[in-house]
Length: 348
Image (cartoon, rainbow, N blue to C red; front, side, top):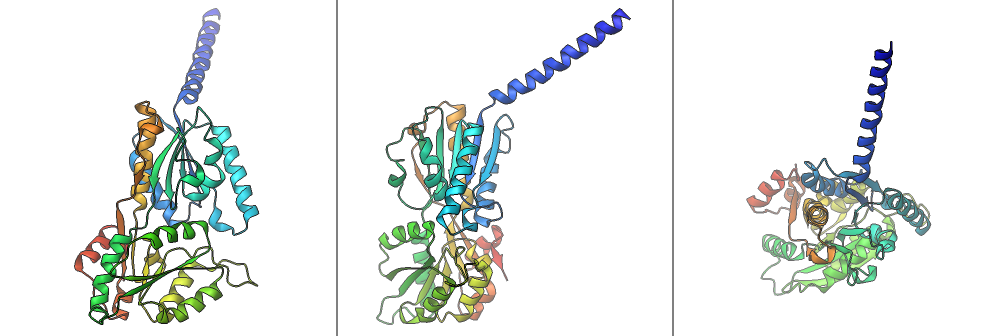
């Protein structure tokens, strides 16, 4: 009997010790929190996660968590404020060693509040505009990768299409117009797009609209202003001033392609998935891979974020919708189709 009791006691102590070891290991594991501005069902967010997971796949020793702010689901500032408060509480509760903040709302509403935290390292990704408004230019605990539209690549595509469309050699410069909703990311993009040296293309600037009625009005008039219509953001377009319901993105692009007298080119890879003819967009995979690699440098090599240079996006993804190309009586280089097929961004 005594031996049985002793054995039971030893087993109980071993069980308690094992639990203690597991708890201690979990408590001391390096922590990374990935904070997304948008929701998990947003294609950009999903593909950024693909890039993150390529780096984190074999790093089981890390304690990794995700939080989604879902800011594209709402238009009003109060909803965004509440999303920021909830995300801030999630950061405080988890206390990550590295906070990976993706896209502008994650910076604006959350990450900026941890710039003076000596125990918090911040890696940003998907930042469309300048980092100065967030204080990242002087912060010692921040690094990351900027998202910059691949305007140079798009410029080359436009010039190729212009020749096929009979616009080159006409004596007039090919004109482009950028159309977007009024979301923060759209304004950040237009600052960069408008500052780019488009020559020999005559870029007509950017128009930002508040609802789908205004969007349709611009598309109807676009032929008088440009030869190519550039689009990127339209996921926060209410149907009208009287109806605040967001219009589904595929409905917007289907209408745009049907009614636009000029070719429509996307500046996000997923614009083609929504219905656009062709898109040249920033690689979401690069954004995720670089952010994850920087986080690992901080944790495994003990580097300060200030020791890791901020990077600018270099990779891009071409997506193609063959039926729309044929509808416009255009032809594109075979390599575009090969690229789009290789990245699962080719549509019949």
